[in-house]
Length: 204
Image (tube, rainbow, N blue to C red; front, side, top):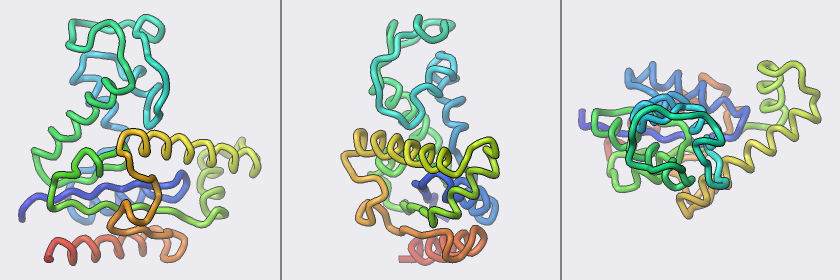
């Protein structure tokens, strides 16, 4: 089959990453999320803490000597702008796409691969109660109010990053081929729905 790409945008706590992992297993293709940080660091020669600091966030200039020393020469000079970090990560995403079909979670992959024909862009949300419950499973030390604040901050961060680099609107229906609320069908049901949608879209 000709290669294809699935890009998943998601609200924090929506189960988007887990859905992507299950879908990747079902379709037998690789998935890339935070692993892109390690790849971008290896590709550029900079340590991954620099990328983690700016992960899905539009901020200020990052000077390497203010963070962690790097090893070796590189093409990006003594400081990394947000745009330079984005370019490094974008190059990694394009390189992975050249190798074959895959799933990307976040990181503006839908915008980076916008010239690709066989691409499916998906956004996953969930009911607030389910999102809070899912986040508190990972962070039981947080109260419900703290979790809500944490959730809102994370969504704002992702939206700012996406809107800035893509000049599109994060989470807006017109940005994607498919938007789903994972609370409606559950994690497994949502994954199966996306799989059926992907297979149908690729036939057309």
